[in-house]
Length: 47
Image 1 (tube, helix red, strand yellow):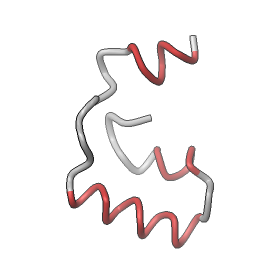
Image 2 (image 1 turned 180 degrees about the vertical axis):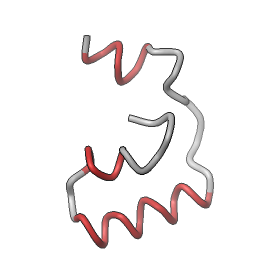
Image 3 (image 1 turned 90 degrees about the horizontal axis):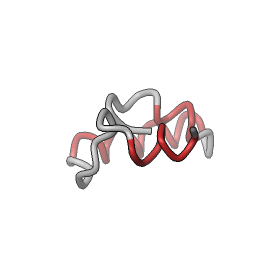
């Protein structure tokens, strides 16, 4: 199930991050630290 949700699901985008997504990740990491599940929720279509 976890592999399906994170890798095989057609709803997950398998493309490089855009500059906007990179910026979102950097800002979120500054705010939340290494809470990657929280950061992932900010990126639609990503896990």
